[in-house]
Length: 248
Length: 338
Image 1 (tube, rainbow over the protein chains, first blue to last red):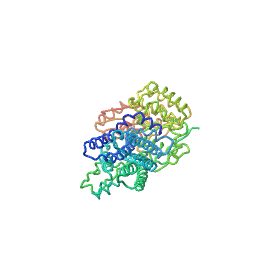
Image 2 (image 1 turned 120 degrees about the horizontal axis):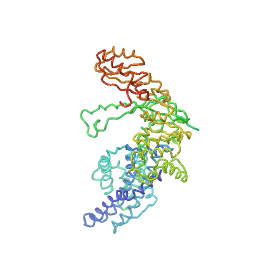
Image 3 (image 1 turned 90 degrees about the horizontal axis):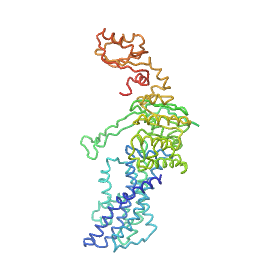
């Protein structure tokens, strides 16, 4: 089944590539190149931006890679049924989707690093201080994004995709601490607490902590615990939703 | 060894939640406060018990909404019954899903092909899900594509296929892992006559290899032509179960005359009963009656005379010969097409 998803992903590679990377790259270009180049933002902002862009790309690739096909396959064509009838437990099909989404998210993160570096150069200093922590954070972020995609994809009908963008994705991006560090919110204490329910915050802050530790960031332990919590929560919700949807 | 199918007192009640807008949605309405709309309960199956013998072609016949697809859904792990049990061979469908899935092949009512793949890939991946080796699955895919006359389109995406081609490919896919029990949910709906005959041949051939076939249909001709035994279902339970020939013979008389009168009276209905060859008269409403009789056309002149004597003018007559359709009418008071 993983082979099937890999096959389909290869077939749609160019489309997937454009929809995943165009937006973050434009952001990198405008904020990192134009705004900094014209002096509206200090050059060090580039360093701050990079981890956030990686986080956004990973999270949305993961969500997208799982949620969109699921929404389509559970529509009236019920394309997913051939897999639901394969001789394995229904839950494993959901797990397979999560693994496929997770792999795509990791690939997305690893591709964005050199691409963003190319656009932002010169003046970006990334140092992977703790490679192991970095790897763990990448994997945890990939898992929660894929599980989030599973939960969303099984909760939403095709006619509500627009709503999903407006109500879930957009606020997640803007309150995700991707374009600013979490500590920048300290002048808005309520907001600063409220954004903590957004898992993207931990993705951005965690990558910031490992890539550009010179900037203020949440503690690594807090990030790891929070990411793990969201991984488990979204996986449980996602599996439950999937089974509800698979069996009427 | 052929495998049978059994269900016991299966009930299924769907609860349809009201649409998002009706419940207030995101914009709370003043009158929606507190009072949550009750969910609509739709009973689909009402204590359905069936026993399908190993190696037979069994038909479920009934109008739309009778519960045929729900029955197939329950037997194929896709619809969880509200109560009751179902077995494929010795395996409880809801306790041993994985073993059950190995035994069954399912052709759904609407083609649910994987639109991201080509025809050939659909078959190959399906076999791979069932753990069939790569040499064997390639051979089998080619054989089935040939049999269903799809070889020319094998490497095209199924998105552009016609309804009939998708249907054929669905059936080919269900046969890929050579299941012991094949479920076909309205297999010939939307097929042209030529393809339908091809399909019938393939089903018979499959059955001769010792497989059990369960098909649902609302087409009398198909049920008659293919099935060894038939269950007629309406409103979620079995109303008759036998061989097609026995079922047809069980309709009183065999012929049905559906009559309409300008002005029907109780006396007229009574007098119709006494005509030679009439077995049963059912007055459907104040203007019509169904007459079950041994003969058809030869009764008409007598009925017309009778009616004109009583001042009730005969306005419409429809005669049908012995068929499963009449049987359905007899059991439910409704025609299959109603």
